[in-house]
Image (tube, rainbow, N blue to C red; front, side, top):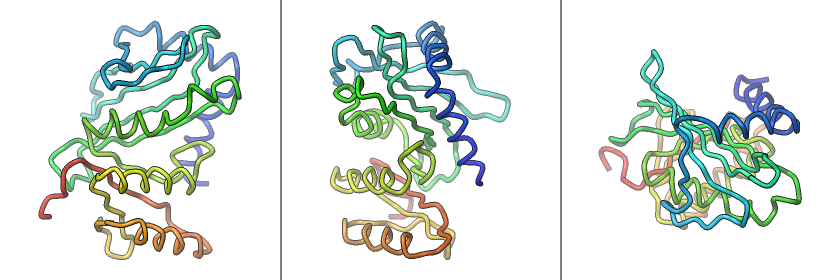
Length: 208
């Protein structure tokens, strides 16, 4: 099992257990750095929900972290959660790169509130501030399907999309849905494929 898989399992357990989810809700909503970002990004949450961001100070190795959550105030719970780590590498552009670990509740109660939430948060908010490094397996319960869906949305949305090529150890541009499908088909056809990695940006990579 990879480190990413272990981290995803820990994250999913933390958010799926009712007591732990309630504790995270309390920690997020009571944090000093909490702020509502729904209005800022033009996102209208369902009644009783709030989309919040909690910032954390830089740590000793010079990276920054923040968390985004869709919280259900009526039940004091977290319906959707992203932990974001900002880094300077890889750096094909001149912006920070956001690496994300994502979890969403499977409860039917949150179905309407979670509709299009990933698209709104990833592309309506995070991508406007940072490049997104989207790694297959960093989403609990999503895997290849989530990765392919979000990268496909990015291409349709006019973002610059690059896929990491394990052979050349470099990112290469993916311009069309057909090219993305070819990459996806190849990954599904491989017995032990490497995790798919995409870089999504609003600006072209350096040198393009």
